[in-house]
Length: 248
Length: 289
Image (cartoon, rainbow over all chains, first blue to last red; front, top):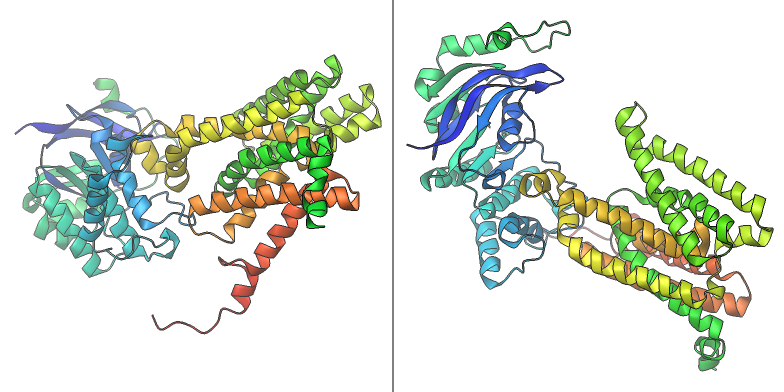
């Protein structure tokens, strides 16, 4: 199986302090990977590194044949200005950017695909609603519709099911499984360990450093989870240069 | 009778025709820009930039008198220098963007007024501060029209990335690099429209024709296209009615235009369909679903 992402001794962080330390490993094309770890474990940092908005402090992230535009990214707190006067239809249509760019028209076929995406997330009838009027769950459904239209080969979701109800997360997870079925690579940060056990074949357990990575059942063991929980969250302001780094 | 009141001032007097052409072009160019400034929460940035333009225009004036191109070029340069210094200081020091902008535009304004008052007369100073829409010469009129044309064309070109950059900058960054250049082009449009406004309405009121119609639009529309149309229409109406008012009542024309724009705004604030005060006070009984 070909590999979509390859991490080579990657260290990501802020201001020289590592938030993800010495990560090695690869993500296969078409894999469905849960990234699990306590708050502050570096999940969001890792995702920023993958989509390229954060440069590694050391090491390399190889994206193979994937261009940055081939990766669709749903951040944990999308920077959406909810007071902006735009409706659901237009916001979802942004997902077509890769095909339309600045000037491309949105023709009948594109319209059909926008309507299809809106109905796939169960928001039919909301097309003309201003985004300011949406609930948290409806907002997340709308962002998934935009992801659908982006038609990306890799999809990175940062805690997409936080603060949404069970029905919404089940509906949205159906879409994730559909992407998985279409051989797209999906990485998802998750907190619900039982849900990960039930639905994700592969898991990366992260606690500033990779604790374990592989088949979910062999990663989410009580010992590994305990290790992850003991992770120290605070930066040491007086940390020395990383010895492992010097040795490499 | 109606003809005498509404049309005759413009058919009889050439300076009124010129003034009308000037304010209409100004409204067409500046009002859409104002809507974006408002939506980006940059309303006061426009105001500050309008003041920042002054010393450049004043230096142009100092070097070559009331020369259109010297004053315009000076204004553009001063605007960009202040924008650049603000960005640098905000990035390099603890001072935030708003404070950095405030310091530079105040310095710039003081410097500008000093330069004009040293070299020119009080009439010149009044011209710079409040403009003179009734004395637009051919060159100035062409400049305002050209600026409005460039402004509308460029806005059409950058419209999509600009809107996406406003709603969801994170998404824009993840799909394209067009967001940064679109924002920069937008700032340039702000400055050229302020330069237009500077000639017609003066440095103090230039931003009025940008922001008041934009705020008016906000009370009537829920989507940005309608908001821009309403803002532009109210800017055009304010330009026409303001000139009439100044003609019949005999008050200064620049402030008259802005006063009418302000009156439209106050009416919208009270009666606007979207979040107007009366709607909030008397929302009516709640609906079934």
